[in-house]
Image (cartoon, rainbow, N blue to C red; front, top):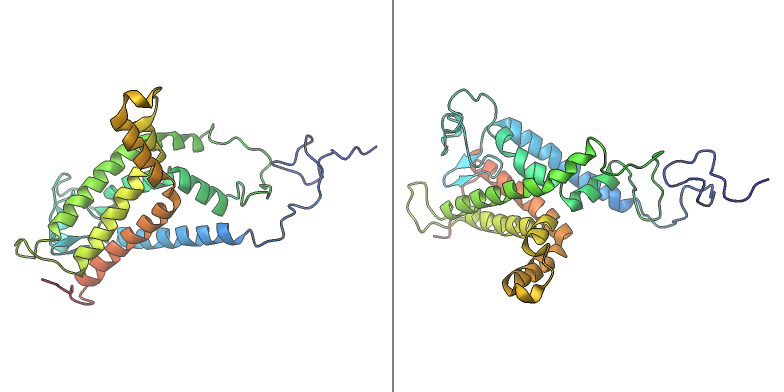
Amino acid sequence: MATGTEPHPNSGGVRTGTRAAIAAPHLRTDRWWLAPAATAAGLLAFIVYSTWRAFADTDYYAAPYVSPFYSPCLAERCRSMDGGPNADLFGSWWGISPAIIILVFPLGFRLTCYYYRKAYYRGFWASPPACAVAEPHKKYTGETRFPLILQNIHRYFFYAAILVAGTLTYDTVLSFRDEHHHWGHMGLGTLVFLLNITLIWAYTLSCHSCRHIVGGKLKHFSKHPVRYRMWQWVGKLNARHMLLAWASLVSVALADFYVFLVASGAFDDPRFF
């Protein structure tokens, strides 16, 4: 005799014997799928663009601008390929695009970011695709098994992200020089770089790991007024973490695309002085 609690024949995920046996996959009537679809489309667009630019291996330096995808240039070939500055850390033996070295760190930081986890879990893995919509998986193990357990290294990617942001800050400062290394230059690219580095720092510092580092494990905020103020400031940024994640993703692609256009000769960098 049916009791009303038996699992649906096609049940899986959250549909277990302890839950009501509702035949419908969900009871939502709104267009709940728009949000995960838009998220997936946005992330796919960036993945396609960044992959193309990383393997293009050209048009990433137009004095005084160097693409954030290729900075810092760590191979001798950076100078020979695009005429740009390089640290020559890897010498001449490094034969593939220098962006392959660089993008590992900011991409690792974003892929393990708490917001991006939610974004691609919902957008690609349907885990779950939306609130009050059951996920299609037979069981849920969370981030306790390989490979998702690797998400725990996010805090270490945060340290790398700080170094990346510092490097991009240096590049932004250099954007105030002209091609002859004379200070006092400002072009449209300088403003693009200023916008990008502002959003990069805001996104990086709004990270949950940063908030924990600043104010975590404190039992008495009154005894640590400086850290408490910092924790409050980071908390305000953290409340806008999703917005900053998308804004900085767009700005870093825009900065790279701008350098590409100038380096490829599509147009000259408009200069204000």
